[in-house]
Image (cartoon, rainbow, N blue to C red; front, side):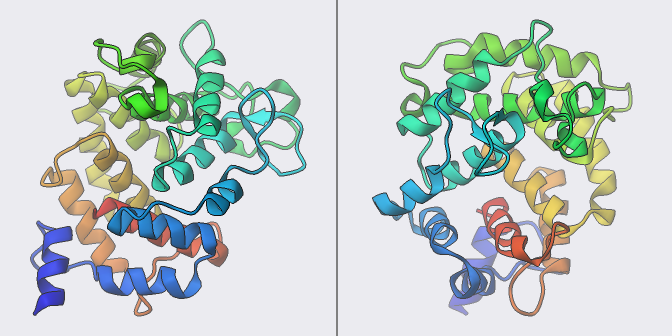
Length: 290
């Protein structure tokens, strides 16, 4: 009975299927590495990670503030830096100097038209969603960078004294990014980029109080949830929850239902990037239901 109440509290809104959070936690504990287990502890109980865990999570940062796509890399990557910020956010570490330097680096990398692109020297190694010069990749990177600047800009620990403007300490940067994203949306709320760019841009626009534009994207996303891979549904849910979208909003209710339907018997969720990322996908699902 107690377990049922806990599941209902964490994932409200689903009548026919409920995410088994206890099983998901057990999966991460059994299979996660030291950083992943620390992320779980911070997400579930607020337990601060040990200093040595934070050192592992921050390893490889380049002097200018960003992280390379590979540990031996010498050029900072927008995509890799945003991914690392996601891990540090789970650890409650956006206020530490490593994350703050990364956020400042991201802000300084913004292009005059409001977007982001990877360094041209990464053209031969960047994945398609981060390829320099590709419009679809530029839209995705803009949504991703603006999302993390939106999250951190409203946290005094991460960005210094808060700014009264919408967007907080990075208000001008994020506003320029939001205008760039909104200008490229189609009338039906679809976007000219990869799937993840949809929920990232919806979150950015929501934080900028551009609610109509964000809602149009959310409608388009809701129509696709039934066909999405579990890891993508988890990412969608975690992203929208992180910027304060109501957990009873219909797109999040649909996302939780889809997660309940796709949870494996071992408590985890499958990642399209390979089983080595299943724990990361499971942590994201837990965050989506938090």
